[in-house]
Length: 274
Ligand SMILES: C[S@@+](CC[C@H](N)C(=O)[O-])C[C@H]1O[C@@H](n2cnc3c(N)ncnc32)[C@H](O)[C@@H]1O
Image (cartoon, rainbow, N blue to C red; front, top):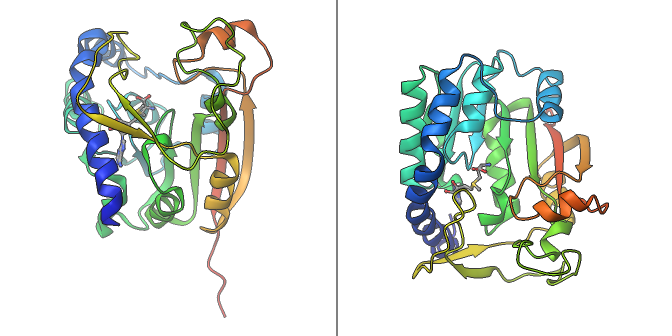
């Protein structure tokens, strides 16, 4: 990986290691209990329908930026075969693996920067899965998609359920602003946001950190061109007013017609043979 990116991804690792105990105090036991129930699935109905339609059963799945594993454990409970989650943060990988072992759900969790995932994982997966708030931590989307595609078998699928880029223009702390629909940030933004603290969207604890975190806004054109340039053909794209960021709940409640999330499914094209 380019060394200039390490500055960002390692700082984000520190910030996530710092906040994870706060997330765990608020929700670890809840998720342990939930996954003790057979076949528990965390995702909502629209996503589960799409996962079933794309044939999740029996598939080899990689989840990139998997955090505490609740989505990957759910994919396993939906019938996926081999399930491997990758995340840069030490504490979340430990929590995810402990939960999988406790609940006897056969998933493996690997601590790695996504840009550094090793060659032993290449051409291995039928599905690469990415979900809410994963891509914003990544300084280079084209390189990320190149990595994701390298993990896929030929004809494999990439499934993205993410925060809508449009909603990045609105305040992510919408409980604190009067007009939740006021545009407060530009859509076209090349420099990352540098923030300190504020990552406890689970327990809601306010804290000031000494550790900077870097958040990158990826426009819709960055996402689409990043996929197209990595030989992905898009087979599904839907937008929704559902908030998956935990920061736009008042906008969701207002039903103001704002796109807050999207699901995209793309397929790795077969190599053309001469
Ligand atoms: C908001 S979580 C997304 C996962 C899940 N959808 C969730 O809501 O919990 C973001 C995750 O991305 C991980 N992450 C950030 N940068 C990464 C990188 N360069 N490589 C791997 N994981 C990374 C963080 O450690 C964190 O666990």
